[in-house]
Length: 346
Image (cartoon, rainbow, N blue to C red; front, side):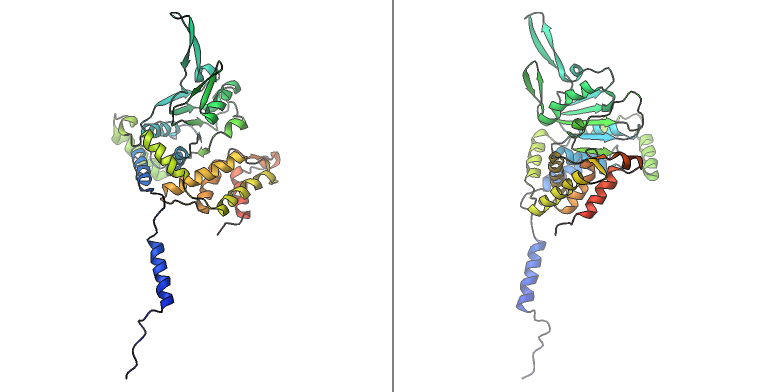
């Protein structure tokens, strides 16, 4: 009897490995994130009708929205900080208000004030522009300390206390604040307690040459059409709440939590830093990394999600030592040093 050709026969062990591999390829998320992903793509698509480039800026705005966070946007004048924030608010079917901060702005101009009703002889509270869903604060560093302090409670606790009465903000509530880093005349540095209430500090840069050409072309082709008229709303408050809930359910392993904690702890003992990150910073990194995972269609957090979150979360919370600041070092440099010194979990 001739020997049979056994070259094409797969050993049982190899068979089981192949099946396991196929099962891994067919792996499905425990949380259905397909609708969330599609909506995020629609948001980006709507904004791209007007905003050219700035992909990271738009992605960070979406991540902040899903993470229940506020955003500080920093950049020189004329690079579409304000218009992007306004258009972003337009994509959501929610209320929107804009407050221009000035040196003579009073807390009551932001929060509201009690006014005497002549008919009833009672004082009635008239709500200020902060009572909206998406609040754009333009040039936030132009208002003095007492006006800055008026934002502390509403940004952290989503409520305002006037004359001993608490007024809750209707969800969703998000503050988008812009500031100009170049013009210093008539500006006030934001206190650390204020900065710590922002989930992200987004630095917006100049467009590239090709992006600049595209901006000019689209502006020319648009003729008299207003940017706000070109944007349609794609997300309701109800859907947003559902997406936020799904984002919070994204799985994060204990070793990833340890990775976040180790990075933030190192900021508190680093020789180049005068002030490190608080536990609020750790929570912000975790929440942002969950949102990064969700918009990428994953129901679990990876070290890459943590790395994406680090600079936007920490850059405004860390304070360099005076010596390093004089040398021209930045907080981003120190964040990169710390990242290199912490072992990535496997």
